[in-house]
Amino acid sequence: MPDDARCPCLSGDAYGACCGPVHSGDRPAVTAEALMRSRYSAYAVGHEAWLRASWHPRTRPASLDLDDDVTWRRLDIVGTRAGGPFDEQGEVEFAAWWRSATTGERGRLHEVSRFVRGPAPRPGERGPWLYVDGDVQP
Image 1 (cartoon, rainbow, N blue to C red):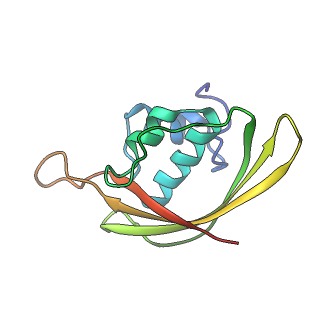
Image 2 (image 1 turned 45 degrees about the vertical axis):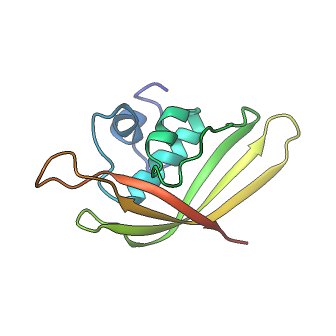
């Protein structure tokens, strides 16, 4: 995705100033919400490697099968609980809207996702945020 394109997470920033540096490893996601936004953007652009890298090893699937027919259209952050720069865990509730390119069907994924900090890369530093799992909401 071009750096000057609108970021899929709809933060209002360009991809190169928002989720792009998180995907490339140039900048960590500093909050659970920032990681959630980067994961949504990874689904939107088909960045399977980032999705797997940002998943906690305890719950990470062996493989992902991203559906090329699905276009992710909009992300709404409903709320957060903890997950800030100095927290060790957090939750992000979101709604993600999609559309099928083949059938035109539309839908919404509403989930409360759980995140934790991974191991710190060096003493005195904070570990990266990792997606653990989520509860799909009606």
